[in-house]
Image 1 (cartoon, rainbow, N blue to C red):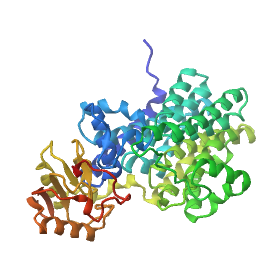
Image 2 (cartoon, rainbow, N blue to C red; image 1 turned 180 degrees about the vertical axis):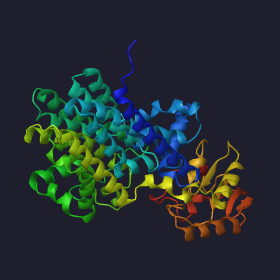
Image 3 (cartoon, one colour; image 1 turned 30 degrees about the horizontal axis):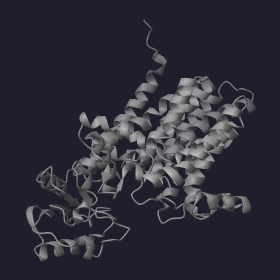
Image 4 (cartoon, rainbow, N blue to C red; image 1 turned 90 degrees about the horizontal axis):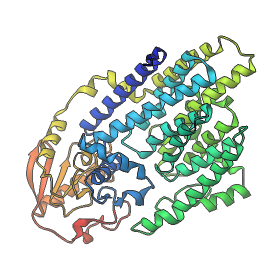
Length: 496
């Protein structure tokens, strides 16, 4: 019998502590109605429907799962709903996969540096990086499944283990379509690494070809609308061909998209500072996919400038490339300085210092654990739970943004102001951030008065300012002010 390797015990403890912390914060936020219809409600509704052998069309997102993005890997998560029938499944899976990324990162670092302390510091910096924290604690997004497989792929490269390499590579094709471009960038980077250039070239071609196949053929062919819905790349072109032409004719634009906003510069600085500036020393085979990921985020021109910053899931892929680049950068620095015996100790200490400093200055989400208000259960929370418990499980329902993830395990559920012929409507008229998106608090108050004032809905239950409205009769919702507005929805079963 093989004896347990106690050298990895600190790593296991580190991963368990962060996994438990992130899971606790995610679940408590959900219980406090701080998660939203977009995006958690949308993913929960569609993946739950898969678990029930139902077509994964989302009334919340007004789109079906594979029409939105090429994300078939989510089908593998669906069986977990038979163990835990809650949106919490997605939150826990997200925390688990992002945290588990530390395992291959550690083994890569051990392989390349030989230092246990430095390898633990790399994992620590990755786990506490504000981009990692917000990736885990900002709803649920399929892209957060990618960092583990990226790290596993590079572990396969470093250890020359084909099973690890392909176990990391293949799932990346089935998480989200733009990861095909990440794969292409990884291949382009490997072209500059000796003994693997042919493989890198093939990977670049395969990733590029698969991306264009997805957005121009596969996704439009399975879409109800017959188009790919995400041609919004940005400042140097709306479509990939436009971007390619503009970059060939005006190559300086690739630099411009990194420096045309203080938000972007701040993102790059915080990212490299957290990792003690080691990514700057990384070899080109890792710098290429790292810079490509930043470029794919920065090329977007708005209005959601959240793609440029570190407070959402868009930083999840950057996080793992920053960690990988830091390992390679440290090894390169040690070679340059003559293989100093104490260099890795110094670099590990620097990593711990810079990552903790960034976390402290930015007051990252982990700080929630020491805030008393995080554990308080205000009356409005109890009122919402009471009202939600009164909704019949098979009834169609429309609800505001922050209540939706608690109602999505049903065939027909909608985000207000759509679904206005639903059997029930759930509202909470206690104001708060993002509660009513895409409406404002004032617009939701007006909607409430209209629905109840004309007798179309009556108040079936009330608890404080939380309301359960029951439909009295249907109307032609096509006459409503929100009908047909692409900012809200384009289709509803409640039309019939």
